[in-house]
Length: 185
Image (tube, one colour):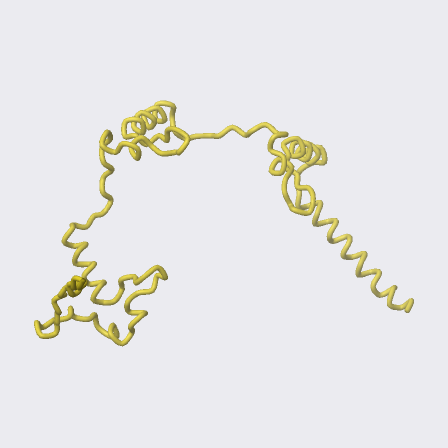
């Protein structure tokens, strides 16, 4: 038993000296600098506390001064952006957070369309997706090809061809109730 303690003791001492030597060479700051940084962090609320890992300034922001926001835009740029937003009706107004352009769209210029496709190209893409079964069916987000795999297997399907004999329409005939006969007296 005593032999084990003597074997382990030099190992622990060596580890302690190596750890102490590493800690001294790793930092170049003096004790005063470290204390000053710690004091500044405490003052700013940047020290974690409790089990949640929150910093004091995150848990209680009302106790600390707000940090100034920095911007790369000049004052003239900000004023120009504000004037443009007012002109196009993009500033929220009122309690509903709706912009004037949303409330009265006729008074403001329309937003430019972001699509680079023509109407014919969009229609062609839609037809191709419909033939390939890529159109969504219902509220679940499944496609036609997922609902009916045999129909859409392989190459995109060709549009169905209907013959006049396949379409059977029966005219709806409205039946009138028979006239009630007059009671005999």
